[in-house]
Image (cartoon, rainbow, N blue to C red; front, side, top):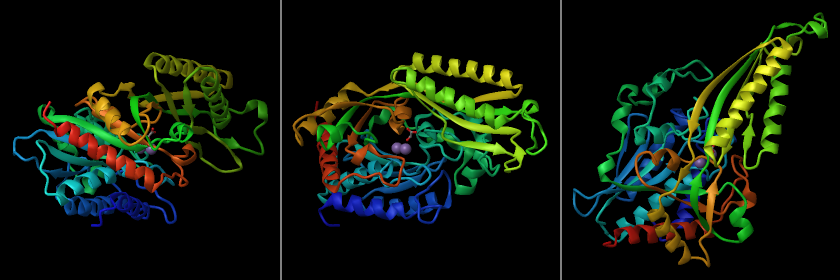
Length: 410
Ligand code: GLV
Ligand code: MN
Ligand code: MN
């Protein structure tokens, strides 16, 4: 391996972007054939960097670089390897590949640290297939809810079946929990997914906190009917009710400081141009740095759904499928990252993350810290997502420095 680790990270990001369920796009959902290939290829890179590799019961890929002594503690590094639909190259894989680059440098210089490093490629952070955000990191953190195994994907396959088909063991997910007594912490590098670092003209920044989020599946149930014969005043159109609700979601987000609220998916059933929709299903994603404000917003949206349904004589259902509290990053690890950043650039800005990250779930298990890398135009969850090799080089240098600081006797 050449010594330009950032260049190799960029090449590997390009290679992973080709591993997809959809031709011409990058889409890797949980427990899919594309994830199997990804685990295989990333596993090879982990081995090249001197790590032993395992896949846990839920499908997380874990590379282990041993400590100088067998009883050493463990530093976890990583991010997720799954993607949204039609994703960019960086969201997730960047954190895994930068971590591997750091370990590669230790391996090349035959350096063993007082602690082991485990690089984790989480199997599912985006939750695209089962609306199960942080699924991989919740398994490692020991907060996985076995009830989720009953969830079904769009084809009716349960999560338990998907895990089994992938080679995992749905009955042994509790065994994936990390040993809290051995863990020093978890540090994650991630593309910023926003415009702040670009505006500040800085390569990297340190994350102070991660916003909480609620995700729900909502349905409106009216009556399907003939689009040509049922008079307008006799209709119980489920999609029209959903449309009104979507505007209410947007308006709440616009009028409450710091709140973001999104309907990202919608389906009209039975789904034909000459049939009045009998059912509309939609997703809802609500986030705010303050948990109480987020919870209140969800209550208000439920009341709005109730009002709309009753005005239109349709029924409605709300199923909360994910809820995570806001998380503050660990002070000590964050300070180490800030020190390292200041050795690479004039200042170490602290940024709050509106996006969710595996670090949020991992905070239930151990101290967490995060480094953000400048994102071109702030664009993410989009194939145009981009970060420069120069900035990735800074991220690798910061993480190397962070590891060295942690390895120093206190
Ligand atoms: C994950 O990337 C999220 O913030 O939705
Ligand atoms: Mn994402
Ligand atoms: Mn991500």
